[in-house]
Amino acid sequence: MVRNSGQWTEAADDIVQDALLTVHRVRHTYVPGRPVKPWVAAIATRRSIDALRRRGRIDAQEVHNEAAYETFADPQANKEEAADSARALAHMTSELSPGQKEALELVKVKEMSLVEASAASGQSVASLKVNIHRAIKKMRLTLSKRPRK
Image (cartoon, rainbow, N blue to C red):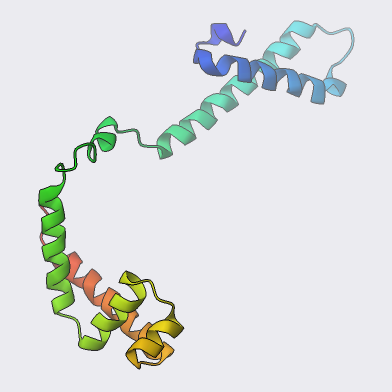
């Protein structure tokens, strides 16, 4: 029944297994003396529909792009984009205050903890958090105003 319903073949076995488990789980609902085949067919049909819906939800959220895997195959592939990104980052960080630059460099680039960065910079932990937050906010604002290619 499932194979004839037009389901994709790789999932047919899973659907049959699910239908058999459902038949076992709801066997108490079968009325003796009534035909078994329509009862089982209804269960198999419903399990097939459920599988199609599940597959549709998964496919709607997944994106498959073959070209995405090819982007980094060649070391020279993204050289221009990397140079553009480096220039944009340099431009954005040039607009930050010295405290914001230092906080970003210590915590985000050098990956120091807030306590270590506080000891290295002389800024308090709270001041570091504020500077990082303001720097990221300012950089996001700059990025949002930047024209897209």
